[in-house]
Length: 462
Ligand SMILES: [Zn+2]
Ligand SMILES: [Zn+2]
Image (tube, rainbow, N blue to C red; front, side):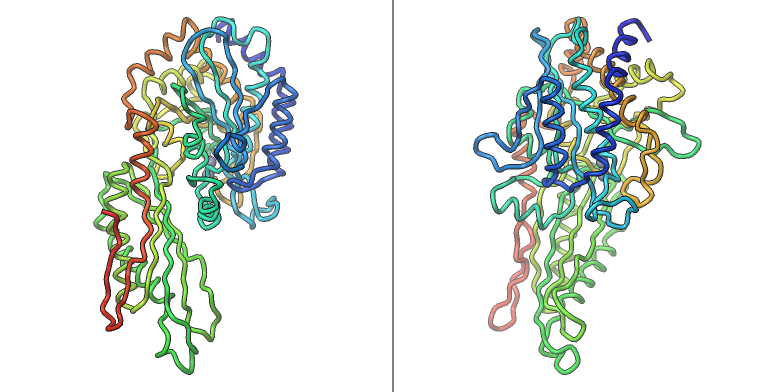
């Protein structure tokens, strides 16, 4: 660590209590995507106490009210704009021993929000911006987890949101306009024998969100099943067909399809007339997701036809594939190594994860890195998830991010400018990106029968 980095560590340590207290409070107040008002209200107050005036995403004219906000830290000198995210949302996981109203922060997003608050505090220290140029936009963002699709679809129909993912929605609202480069830190559970404080892979899959609704006809399950059409059997057949398609998915595309039956609107003595399924199709590129999703929709449609049932297919853009800029990764790696030593840092420039994040949508249009801070035990999204070291998860994360901000924006931001100039984004602009993801939207009543029982089948947009 050099003298400047020592100073930054001090700036973070001054706010240790604030960070650790926020981590505890947020852990105890988990709420799922687009309902994170407790965290929102708590954090807005804390940012105000630090002297910030948060810009509320829900109060931007022309858009619906949702949680989340941003603040700008202006160095006063012309330069690149760096976005730093902290996610607000928890998961639906009622059987976690510490769940509150059926929800728990078992992806560790509360730790990100606590760290972002610490970053905001450290950046208010008198010497924090010495030698830097440009701006830092700290963004508290809702709804990273792609869950409760029916609820979000309702919000969409009511005009409250336009997109399922919080970062996508924030882009839609213009909050990323003028931003040049982005980073965030996610929590990770370092496995036994892997004593790393920081890690990072090259990227991860994108996903699209699917709602599938099989439509049958109810009748007496014992006395008159011949008068009914069993929507549950149609759904099971559809999933069987999708499973049989799996061997046609190619390894290079890292496709994942993981449907879950959301229940039937019926009782044991009634032939079920409805079965809903939610699923994603995930993949390494948007093109691969589109291609394989078409096959999945064809299989789901064929099953409905086989049973004389109907099926409604609803596809929505989920998250875009996340690809980290390698030069930016190298800079982040160096910062982490400066902080904790190279033996406690593991950056893998080839590692590809098959999970998804809406940070991928950010990396579609600008260079970005999402790296991981340790401090968690158990499994992300699991009932044994536990923050065993808020110090590593949150305070360390603040320090590493301060180092990165400095490395990017010091010396007339020469490092940031080079990364930004060299980056070849998937889409040349936010508008072009939206055009591409809007192309994934599909609403189809895929099998329509005429009076003679002939069917018209239509399961794709183009
Ligand atoms: Zn998660
Ligand atoms: Zn997460």
